[in-house]
Image (tube, rainbow, N blue to C red; front, top):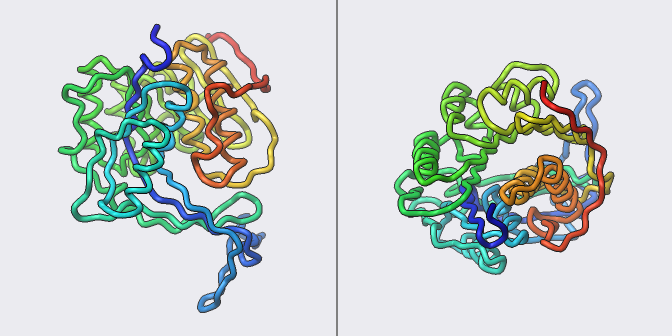
Length: 327
């Protein structure tokens, strides 16, 4: 089994510039009992004072790549940006983290993806997003021919199934394993998505999303049924924790730690990439889930998706979990 820098993971997906606006009296959540939801109410035509602004970069693939490098793995980012200041900010962050950006492509039509996030004191946020180059993908820019690697980590590709099919086919031909965290545009086409899963080794989605792929009511039922499609299935359920199985055991884990949430941005990316950073090194299912959970918990305690990503020397503690054999 390889370890450390000998393991190469190629992260494919979005790259965006994030701007966080916070510490504003106008961003207090408003409850609507009839809808059982909370809203951020901004009066049309009014000016809202904001007392803090934070610039960061995000996108599932760049966030994952930073997890991998901080765990001393060889990380490659493959995605599309614009030739603009936001794209340069993305590259600067990745260069600072020693991520290989030699497979970045540039859009000649769209700007780099850009998000303005209005942060409420609860850690919840309202996001205004220009997706731009981060969701307009062309198969010609995504090519694994002659590219070596151990794993392909793919977050949402904005429903570009032609690109996904090409990448997955090439990855398998090159002997790579695949971890897939599909987004809503892939999940909107369950039959197309299922056809891709023949090549997938690890599938990670939340409970609601997995219910679009397989039958089942509980997380354990969903995971068990998903094992008919992939080797490792992971179902997350927010504060209720996660259920995962590798076909040998089923692990049910609760919250890693109850912390004050500052910003939930990137929490899912942190879990998925945290899991793979350990699983790719041959760690157990339990150890991989503990690290993914710890990584996600750390990220939500900071503004931005990358600041809280754990480093190699992070000290972890035990968390509530239960492991049992698959029947």
